[in-house]
Image 1 (cartoon, rainbow, N blue to C red):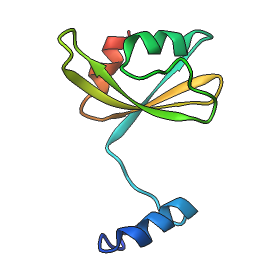
Image 2: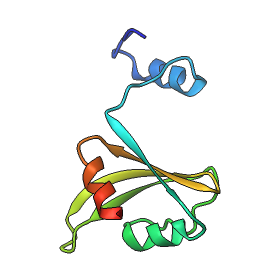
Image 3: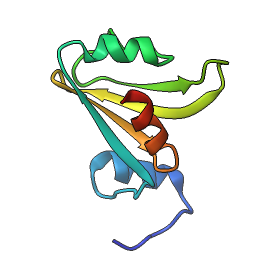
Image 4: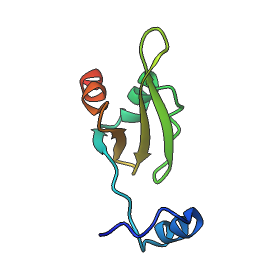
Length: 99
């Protein structure tokens, strides 16, 4: 897919929402499974993940013990699996933290 333009964000947004275009992101996906995954993630992240319903998403931060941001995560749950989209530069750090 060739880059058509970066000139008109409103047109590009409509095309993204309609599925006519896509965006390449420098990110990785980490998945978490298990019946208590939302409760576990809720204890580790800055966002209220425990109440995330299937199909919903949320932004969350992974913080260090001093409260500094280590990573920004986009969290999506489908009712069985929680998917976290993480910037490529922090993916290994997040994965190691969760391990």
